[in-house]
Amino acid sequence: MNLQGDFEGLTLASILQLLCNDQKSGVLTVTCDTEESRVFFEQGTIIYASASLKEARLGFLMRTDGVISAQQLQKCLALAKEEKMHLGKILVDKGYVSLDTLKKYNTKQVEAILYNLLFWKKGRFEYKDAKLNLKGMVVTQLNPMKLILEASRRIDELSVLKQSIPSDKSIFKMSGKVQSKEDIKLNANEWRILSLIDGTRTVRQIITQSGYDEFAVYKILFSVISSGLIEQKEEILLDDEGEENDYSAILTVFTDILQSIKKNITEELGDRSYSLFEESKSSLPIEYKDVFSGFHPDNHKNSNLQAITNALDHLEYIDDPKEFLIIGFSEYCLHVLKKVGEILGSHPLVKILDGIEKVLEYVKKYQAGSKEKNKIVNDMKNVIMKIYSDFKIKKKSSTKGGIFSLFS
Image 1 (spheres, rainbow, N blue to C red):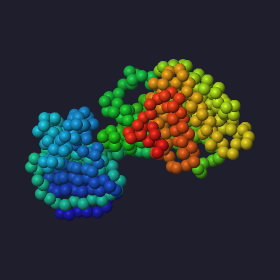
Image 2: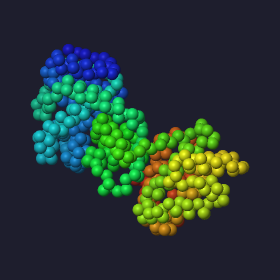
Image 3: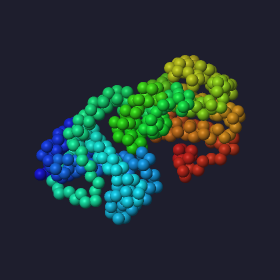
Image 4: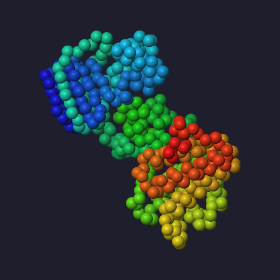
């Protein structure tokens, strides 16, 4: 028997059901864009599956769960390739995992691949009857109908979860509402996802880097959003076609930079950190003192935006208000950093500059090229370089992707 064609929606579930009911033995190959998965049937039962995605691989699942170390995985992968043996057999032979553990993760891998397949909205399939050589393989015994029912349940639940997380391009950050780790009660899987939320990774990147399937990540994200631990990072749209007096994108970037600074000094300075941002305004040129008089990184964005817009509207002889604002914010950040260095010394500045670098990496990576974007990145580059120089901080090596690689 040979079946092939395109599928859309729930057609793939029907194909799996057909192969199960007809008690087929062979291989089903499914492709979607650059992804490919293969499902192996033996008399209507799914016994194995493979996929091109790394998060569906056996070794990756075990390493993610801490069952084996990265070094053990690399060693066994090399040996499996050299001796042309299955990775699972090498892991058992070396004593890194038991046979029961291998069977458990083999089943987990197959389920992850199949759930991922059934989430695909369209693609191409091809089935061919084949006599399978199962010698030396650790096979599983999965009923396609049970998988299809579970996948359908997950798809329905995922549609609800996506109301809170509408896009896999969404970016989340810590909300700052929890004061310490002791106040957070999470399981190991939730801690794993939380550790990847840094204000720069997209939901899709978190799924890929965590090693967990899409449904599991969305469910955990929904849980920590509901608990108030994280919040969606506001989308920044820096472009050359925005409204002339719309300063919201510039304000968002620099608020993130200033909040990053505040996060790293609050533990040392406590309530003093609030007044530090006010005191830093005193060194600004007079025109910028007026612009920033109603601004504070702790204020609500709308309040800050209104104060800055009103101040800029009352200034005369400014050819480019957005460029003027970027220069002012960069100068303000410089004075804040100098004051931090004067109070706390040079050592805390290294961590603070790392935080600023992450914000700029996000701007550089995810924003389309524009005059505003280039101005912010270049001006803040100069601010960072000046702080390094003034406080005699040893610069990071650019060969390791340090601060200066950002601006190359």
